[in-house]
Image (cartoon, rainbow, N blue to C red):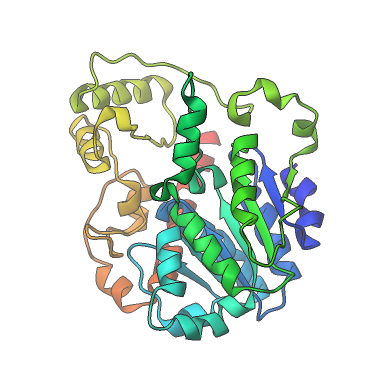
Length: 359
């Protein structure tokens, strides 16, 4: 539904905010029309809040550019694309600080301004609520706290720094901005517009990006939903009590829940309140008899941020193989290409498991 609602508007060059539930196909809703609309030498920049999401988006883009032409590069912790790789990429995907450094913070900034930034025609902010976080204040001192927060320079997010630097270097009136999120509240959209109003060329001064929702979502009264979060209809919420927030009890609780629910695959999100690192949680799960691997390791990031890691087949098969058998091959190849290929292998492996479970 979001693809039907968004395709013609994105393909027409309109700046929009895509608001739809997680897993509804927002990535293709902006990737496909953008790459079909733009000329082969015109560029797309995609900003993601995490490197794991950046790899996923890069893999989606690579699947399209394989048919339409052009290359995809990643600017995230763990990659160091060359100037030529950046300049010739049709799609550049990355996290805010790494993109800002790669494009504007090195001695090659002037060269990249001509070869990449000067040809930039679309900027995508995926998970815009994470990229431009809104500080909410309540109580009798709310107004004063909000003014103080707005004045404090330390609250300027890396995304703002990147976006303003790009807008300054990209004077084209045809520059298109697309934001996407399952959480597109009025406060998030207002913050996005405040940043865009600082564009010295005034492209969005009186015309904030329009919000685009699936037809059925557009008919709902979203003011009754906190922060306008859209949750997939098939999601079922369950609570599994544990004795404490210790690593062992949490891992045992996850093991018992998996035993009861028997899913083909599972993703475990580690909340800040657990006070555990991902590595701690993975080790605790493995000790409890649950084959587990950290997502960044599954994608091929070794300690220190560089690509490497165990075989994708072993990870997708439910194991936690952390050998470096393919590390030398990854290190010698283009890091972006290697990471995208590894993501494809992992996605294919997990999909095969899910198909087998549902057969």
